[in-house]
Structure formats: structure tokens, C-alpha cells
Length: 131
Image (cartoon, rainbow, N blue to C red):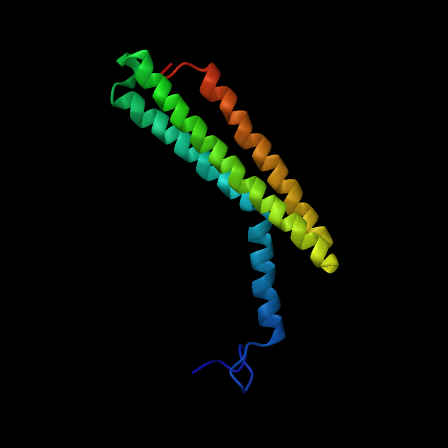
């Protein structure tokens, strides 16, 4: 049984409820790149910390190189996800002109996040493993 505040007599949600849900979805969609960046940041540094605790610092250079290569591939994959998201939102922006401002914010946020994700490659390649 539904509340009369949330639904009409036919069982469908009122337009205000749908608009609020769409607003939250739009906010989360705008921050998608930042979420991917944060998850990527967490993965890279947790993997590095665990690897150092397991003795990667005293392992051979080939093992350290393999870890760096794997983390670089994870970084490139995370950047690709954000770029594809931005590209899809760019296509959507052209199809739905009334959402142009929101899509422009999303594309800009995805661009900033992809630069941040790629910036972590410098840390992977310049800082020695388990330094």
C-alpha cells in the first residue's frame, strides 16, 4: 500500500517525485568521474601498501615492474571509463538541447577527473615501489 503523498490513485509516482529522483541521478551522474577517480586512487594505493607489506620492496626488479605495469593498466582502464562516459554525455547533449548546461558540467567534471587519473601515472613511474 502506498502513501497518498507519493503516488496518485493509479499507482504512478507524481511528477514531483520523479523530478526529485531525476535530480539526484543527475547529480550523481555529474560526479561520476570523481567517483571513478576516488575508487582508482583507493585501489592503487591499497594495492601498493599491501604489496609492500608482503615484501615487494625486497623482491626483484621484474616483480616490481610487473606491479607497476598492472597498476598502469588499471589507471588507463579507469581513464577510459571516464572518457567513454564523457563521450556518451556529449552525444546526449547534442540530442537533448534542454539539458545542455548539466551535460556541459558532466563533461567538464569528466575531463578534470581523467586528468587527475592520468596524473597518478607520474606517481607510479617516478616514485620507487615501497619507498
